[in-house]
Length: 118
Image (cartoon, rainbow, N blue to C red; front, side, top):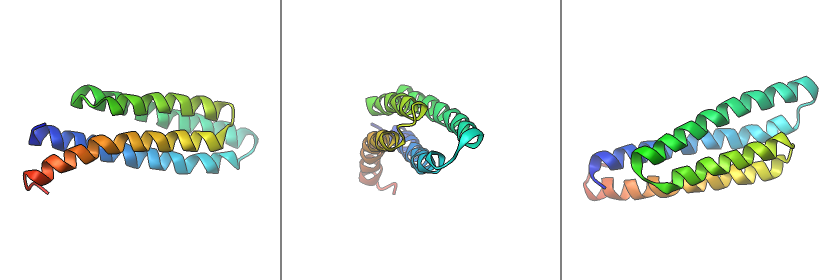
């Protein structure tokens, strides 16, 4: 991986982690809501998760890191868990997606560090 590719992989990885951490913190809030509030909040979260899914797939295509695609698959799984209100497992699944995004970011960090760019 060259320096330009490393910057791209690092940015995709870190941005994805931030987004997914936000999503994982949102799920418990939604679990405590009732009725129309819960339904509306779930819809908004699904919109965000779809956006993150798209970003993860783009990251995988642009960087070649399969971990981004694996993270996107985990987002699909988390959405199904949220749909059936299995909120605890959804948080775990999103956390697994965060872990997947760490590998490309760490690999990129190593390249950037070796080239004294950070």
